[in-house]
Length: 357
Image (cartoon, rainbow, N blue to C red; front, side):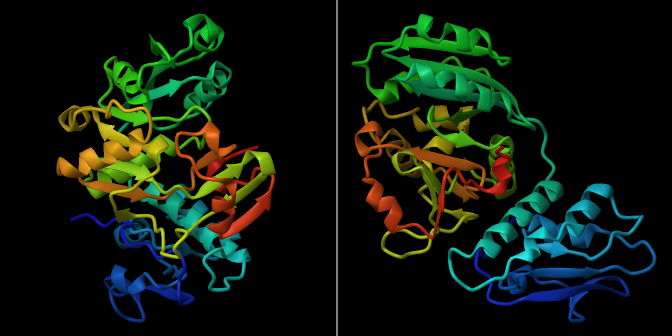
């Protein structure tokens, strides 16, 4: 089985350890690296030998999500790897052992960048399915889809009580191929999604919400996780929220009950606006349930009952917008999100992986 970030510890219990070259391989305290034993560490400080050595073992640790750093680059190390190892900005923040520690967020961002380097993927053909009742949001959503890197995409647009003329300018101005269906407002949300998904020509289907924010590697990271985990369905954590009425960003790492909400785990729950599944598996599951609300939840239930393996990866490239509760199919008051916040910032403050201006 390949090495994966599954089991990544967001809040490490220990500091940095030394990774050095010992005779025939990389070692930590004289022993071959054991990924499970390294999980509690903040990371590994790479001590380069003077002569070139194989980098397979080091890349294996990167693939596992172990944060790696080095105070200098060697001329024989690949430029991409050297640049990541010597970018030590994530070490500038002091860890305090709390769930909302900013140092741990910077550490996880660094880990994700290393995973991308160590898990190269082919370019998947992804059909992005989005249903909308809000024509004014379509242009911004398409612009975010155009930013996606490492994937080949098409857009399947379900116009829910919206006429095509209301979105024509946005669609015709998009650089992506866009297919659309019009459905009356009385049609269940899940059925609108199914009608749009029926137009898919890609190998994978990705669900997209019209009012959320997605980083440029959102889809590539999901496909990477689908690949290394061997999952049938993959999605992210619902971690960052922009509370629009309050003009504030919150980050949650636990549920309201206080239970942990980790990434890189097998789970029956992922953020609904981030679901990715192969088109073959989507059809085996039976598509989206034809219901008005809780389509994502019901789809995941159906997937689980069909024996699909569901994996939850990091949510650092995704931000959910929350307005007043009656504006969303997932109806929770803003007070709920403040209650579960591990971090709270004024304004729009996503993860650095969002590459937001």
